[in-house]
Length: 313
Image (tube, rainbow, N blue to C red; front, side):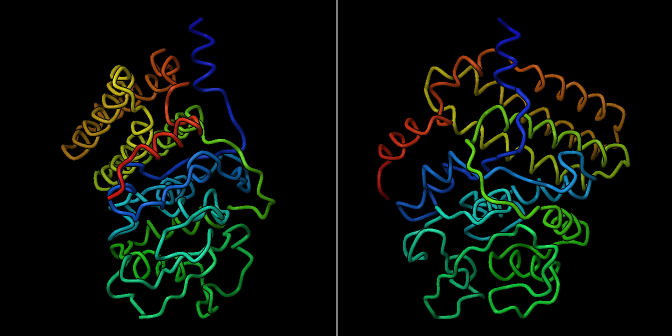
C-alpha cells in the first residue's frame, strides 16, 4: 500500500509541468475574474534541450522563472511569476486580467498597475509571446528594439514588472533557462501534485551547489524561492481536515529556513546534512498527502467551485 502511495505522489512524469501562481495572492491583489481554472490546472508540457539533466544555471533560472520573488510590485504581491504568463515557455493563452486584458492571452504591461514608472497612458494590451525557440531570435520585444535576450529579460523584470535590478548571476540563469526552451507544439497536460513534488526535489538538487561552494547569500535566495513553491502547494490543501498535510508542507518550509540560517552562520556540514535529510523526506512523503489529494484544488472542478465561493472584493 505504501508503495502505491509513493508511486502516486512521485511517479516520474516527463515532460514537466508546474503551477507557479499563488491563489491567495491573486485573490487579494488582482481584480475579480483574474484567476482561470484552465491556467491553474493545465499547462503545456515543458521541452528543454538536453532533457531534465541541466546545469546549475539552467536549474536556478528555471526556479527563478517560477518564483514571484524575481519580479516586484503588484506582480510579486499577487504571487505571479514569469511562469504565469509563459507557462513552461509557451504563451499562456488563458491569462486574463479585467481592465488590463481585452481578451485572453493579452496583457497591458505598460500600465501603472504593474509599475508606476512604466505607465504610458495608453490602453494597449499586447499578445503574450511564446518563448519557445527564443535562442534563435535576433531581435526581442514587440517593437523588436532589443538586440539581446539578456537586455529583454532585464527590461521585463525591472521596467515592466517593477522588480529589483537583477544581478549578473540571476540574469545569466534566466537567459540560460530560456535558451533551453525547445520550439514545440503546445501539448496540454494537467498540473499535478506529483510533478510539483518532483520539482521540489529538482530545486533541492540545485541548492546543493551554493551549499557546496559555501555561498550563504545564494543559498538564502534559493531557499526563499523554494519555500514559495511549497507555499503554492500548501494553498491547494484547503479543507479543514487537511491539517496533517498542511503541517507536513509547513515542516518542509521550516526546515528550508533552518538550512538558510545554518548557511548564514557558516555551519556548512550541518546545512548539507539537513538538505540531504529534507530531500529524503520529500522523496518519501507521508501518506496523508496522497490520501487528501483527491479533495484538493489540484482537481479542476473543486478549484472551480472554490473560486466561485470566494467573495468579490
